[in-house]
Amino acid sequence: MMGKITRNTTYLTCAYIGQKIIALFYFIIIARAIGAADLGKYAFAMSFAALFGVFADMGLSQTLIRETAKNKEHGQNYFSAVFSSKLFLSLITYAILIVTVNLLGYSQLVRTMVYLSGIVMVLDSFILSFWAVFRSQQNLKYEAINIVIYQVIVLATGFCILWLKLGLVYLIVPFIFASAWSAVFSAVLVGKKVGLKFIPKLERAVIKSLMRISIAFALISIFSRVYTYLDSILLSYLAGDSALGYYSAAYKLPAALVFIPSALAAAIFPAFSESFSAAKERLKKIFDESMSSLAILAVPIGIGIAGISGEIILKFYGAEYLPGVEALKILGIAMIFVFLNYPIGALLNACDKQKLNVSLYGATMCVNAALNFLLIPKFSYVGASIAFLISHCLLFLVNLFFARQIINYSCARLFKTLFKTVLSGLIMLAGILTLKMRINILVVTAISAPIYLIVLYLIRGFGKEQIKFIKEMFSRRANVVEQD
Image (cartoon, rainbow, N blue to C red; front, side):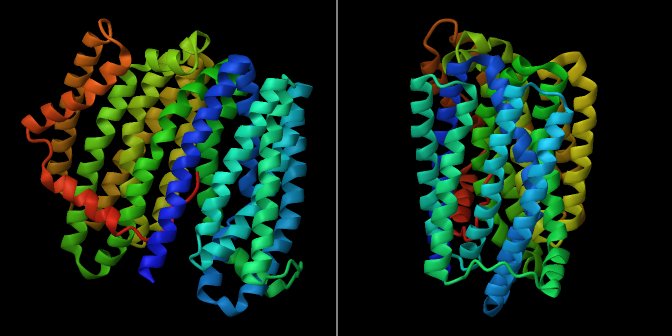
């Protein structure tokens, strides 16, 4: 059984990593082709619809996974109830999306792009529930295959639209085609492989029961979605399309690396859960090792991105996007805290502190929103980057405080590791700044990692135990990595 779960999880994890790489490549092509102002319009339309998408699902897909896994004999009743609810929620959400974007006074072009993105939102809401059926059965292979095909459709269709020079609004069409494929593919599999029927069934007791359970999942999704997309929407509204274009270009690059802490969190979650009730000392050891290991990875990535941000922007996006360099520097440093928050979040969820975790993310969302309202009018996209950095730094500190209530982890060891990694990272940065003026940036990048590791090794910042720990955790991985 464990072998099957691990194998299927590996399928999905690899598919998501591949998807992120292809999606980043496609985004860079789009950015170079349409320019910063149009990229801002494109990013706004996608972000705006994605923000509303959470209300079309309301946590029902996660509830379907949980309840069907526990009571397979009631799978048809649960599926029919969720399918019926989605029909209603999707229509209401799409109507609210249209009204809202019109009230905000955006141009006809942007409104049309939002309308098309809303179609993607509706389709994706149903797709999420269709794949939830397979997740409840721990069968992830088909979803992994679909992820790859979806991205290939987007890539191929998008290239055709760019080649034909059809215009900005048509760049939403690849996602409609890809989501339509996913909806048909997943729906057919639900009927053929699982045997469920698409019969809308409004059984009040079942829907009420599912809705009661889905509230917690919905809150998590709302906080997460608002936290992810609010800065983009506020930037568009308060600072304009070009500002959002620069910010989106800068944000996309470090965000593509989030699969690293996500995969590690997926690996350590079952170990946290197992150790919480049976072996508190082992729980402490796993947490200490995971934080130290992730710090060793996160710090050089963050500092390295900040150090060569100008070269990264120029190489990937071109000279038009050079104003986004300052934003990328700040976001690179912020990624250190983003990485380190993953294992703490996994600890809280594994140790029956889900509600606390939701509350912390909700509070962070509010702080982030307030900072964006305060900083964007004064500093534009740089202000949004600063808000992102401060929010994740505060979340990290608060997370550490509450993690201490669960286990007596070694503060001294954690901050000692952070000190050594930052020191090694700064020496690496000095090397980067010195060498990049003299030799090719690709060579500098290749040299910087050995510089960091040698310095860190010399000051005893890491040893064989970190390498052994990472290998052990990933060999034990057995839970599903969620899609971003």
